Image (cartoon, rainbow, N blue to C red):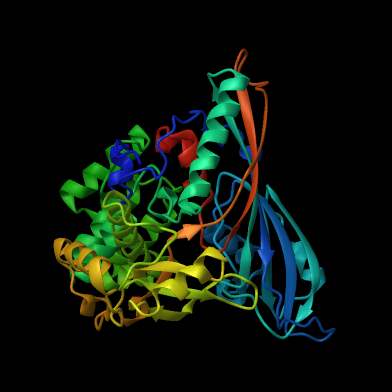
Length: 443
């Protein structure tokens, strides 16, 4: 375990590495095509029929944020974006492939979509739409460049870290820094302000609070509005690239002080992202504390809540059990066989703390946050209320690596990493253990 991590990781609740071997350094996403993701769809129960209400299409996109992609695709089709469904939000600086559903859309309508960096083709028709979460996982091929070590040293460090993760039982299932905004980790801060009922503070924090790793010009215009609270000034000076902030500013221009309404100008999925980000921050803090206090990750202790595998062999956070002394040995045998997993809470208004030692840790971290669990039931903004759930704390994956010369950096090497992850798990949390570098090199 290493507790010397970057401040930008501490900000989002990641306070340690689980392994203590030296990393290889390097950078990812130097080229967009260095980061490839192919979604593994969950097609159980979906039938393709000739007269289905939904057109199912495959989209391969490059340098597109999912929310912007859907919005612009809807504009091309001249329909509401609510008619388009997708299973998982994908990275912007990447080449990603996934399925989408389009209600009441014909194959010929796809010809209306003319967008740079987009390839789209019909797969079939279905009477069931694709919704968030309708995926099994993702396959990744990622190139790490600009590594200033010999090939032999890179191989040695990769092997050492892989061996350590096997002893731990897998990779720690942190929420990756991009969950919060890689260069502007603000979403969980906004989420906390919303839970506290400070809607004005939440709105202006999202719109105008600048972060040090942002573009200098952007920081200037944000800081001006942060200090002045001048909505008209923001509309005039904010670049068009800040689409979501501008949407909120336009609402506030029409409806001054309607701060809840300004969030309603965003898509429903984006509205929920703020609360989800704060939940993710708290999950990261709880998991960091477990590691730093030396509590095993691949074994349950009394009071732990474990989940069990579903029909696909994946963790099912809805099938949980709190472990007693009587259950402990039997459950740990299931964990060793990959049939059960220790979980930590994604906090919400129906959440229950673990028992024993982990319950004490969870209560302490919640108390330190100053947020009551009841706050997740948001009467003033019920659309973003959250019951809470559980998430497994480990992901079992063994990446395959290929070390070769880096054609972009003379005298240096690159590593091509290939692996698959279950849905909701972050490739960057796997790579950070191997690289142990600046989080901005993972963004």
